[in-house]
Amino acid sequence: SQTIHQWPATLVQPVGSPLSLECTVEGTSNPNLYWYRQAAGRGLQLLFYSVGIGQISSEVPQNLSASRPQDRQFILSSKKLLLSDSGFYLCAWSVVAVAGELFFGEGSRLTVL
Amino acid sequence: GEDVEQSLFLSVREGDSSVINCTYTDSSSTYLYWYKQEPGAGLQLLTYIFSNMDMKQDQRLTVLLNKKDKHLSLRIADTQTGDSAIYFCAESDRGSTLGRLYFGRGTQLTVWP
Image: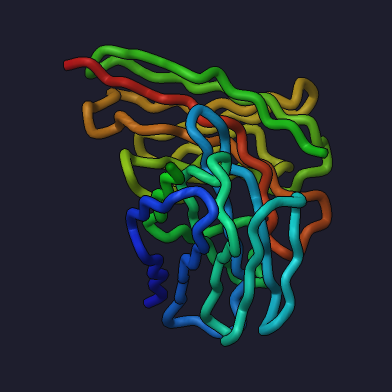
């Protein structure tokens, strides 16, 4: 069966510090991978998606970047965090042939102070 | 872009029915989804409906789709305290093979014993 792991689950970082959130998927090959952010009182915003190794598309301009160094690994990064980067970050994957059905990780809560 | 609108809060008594409503804008969406998010966790797909259907029933869940009005609803029969969660409506990107979804802000359902 397929599983998705995200870490760390909780992170408190000072403004200006770097960020690295990791996500790995097991039990499937060549998945589409996604990073969503859920800010307080707001819906889910798609930040990045990837259809293959090294292929990253950004939905909105921001202080974050993403990388996919391996087929089932997706990393969300920042060189210098802003207060507005605080939120709940969700990694998800989907099967190419079934558009729309996303499988989410448990999320990473980031607080920037 | 696509806009998905939902009311933010709903409170019901245990045993009553809950109806969560959603409106969407992209009439060409292939699938419409309901996701459930329990506190501090990722999202889980609850159910979905194909755009050529009017209704889908799955145990206690009934999804109604009015394509003319672009209105989607989720009815939960015999609501239980374990149903307390945030429910997200989502539509698929038109013609998307990427599984890109557009989410509403979520409806916080609170079930009182």
